[in-house]
Length: 296
Length: 319
Image 1 (tube, chains in turn red, yellow):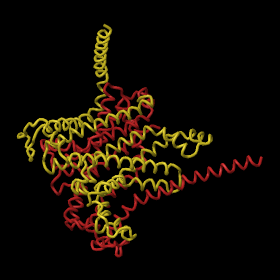
Image 2 (tube, chains in turn green, blue):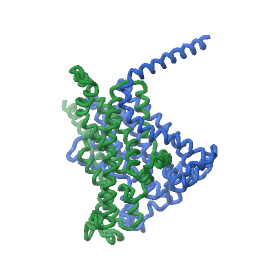
Image 3 (tube, chains in turn purple, brown):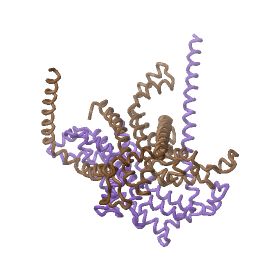
Image 4 (cartoon, one colour):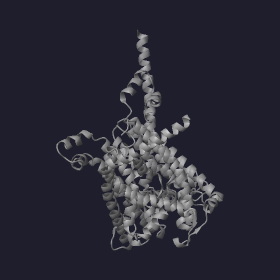
């Protein structure tokens, strides 16, 4: 009797020790990942509030002796030539990203809906053809697109960027949205159609509102993608007043190779809009991204 | 005899299948209107460039890209690539870059997803912090890490010196032997959150009762993971690894901004090399031939990608 309960309790404690081992391992691992992820960003922030002189010291000032917001003031001051450029790049990025986002939602919504609901011949082929676009790097398309843009007179315009961003954002946007439409019961639309709605009305009045989270997620995804895009902007734009942030910052840095606080401040400011957008809406974003690969 | 009749049979069914398809296409003609805008945009910006790249790869085009003056050279551009020493060096770099980045991003991301699976205070915040590197621009990430690796004032070098592990700050990205691993660390920093997101979602689909049953039957944590959790995640893992591999194979910004492929090509990978050939040295023909080769490699990878995806669909009983 006593031996039985003893074995049971011993077994239990042994198991608890094992589980705790895994749990502590997991915690240690998470601490390591947190440091790996956060330390570079913290160092960026700390550098951005140093003076140029304080940043170039060895050994470094682990904590800035005299924190200063000079770099930020310089970047945001419209009277200053650096500030003028930075604000213009920021504005350009905002325009290009917003235009891309609006257009890709308009194009992706009907396409994703069709891929989810209709069974027309070639549906699978077209769907995978759209997905395959994701496989190819920008470089493959760069030379011919450059020629194409030159031929239709779009080189050095934001239109060239919007058009290209649209296509590389579309496949994922369609994929994300299709996952959402797959999860909306067809019966809802059928009910609406029995009540006399056309297919299009059912789509606009019933399906669209239900898929709002998917549309939000798609919009964030397009925005972030366009905001961070570098290679097309770097190739298609050469006039200073049209550059977007990633290219503009690179040009800024190649002219001021030692202004690390300025560069870190610029990198930080460039990251703020996308990080804020992401943190506010991450629930939709993460859900949508995984909807296509994992079905619940 | 049987073969012939079999062939005729096949032809007949093929013909009827074809008219079937045409009829069905006609019946569904309204459906195409929904996908038309997407397809039209894709055709302009994708199909046309692919055709053009293939054409350019058989020509020598003058540096200014005057298309009227291009000269047909047959397969010369291709033989030039395969016989150059740089090609093999760059291919070797690309292999290491792709395999190491994909492997570590996946393992770290998967482990983070597992560690974050159990609820605890601050889990949401921690998860959000871990995802941030994936959201910020690769250009910003490259500059942050370039500053961290700086050969005089970089923080990692300073820490090593302070701890007495090094006499003076090492050259991380200016030395042939350390540049590629250093860049891979940056790439993993940016890529592992993607694997984490995908695997987190995958973990939510593992049926809880099955895990509890395994626990009752005396399976330990590792056995439960290996025999219950992992088999359920096979599909998600395949898709995640393929997407990571393709993204890494195609990466450009981190090596381009941080080193430009140097020192002495030690951090050139295919994409940066193609870019330099095209827009740096203006050797459009060779660059296009490289792109075509790349295209063939990616189509092969794409085949497996589509198979993994459609495997997913089938398991769910089609769409």
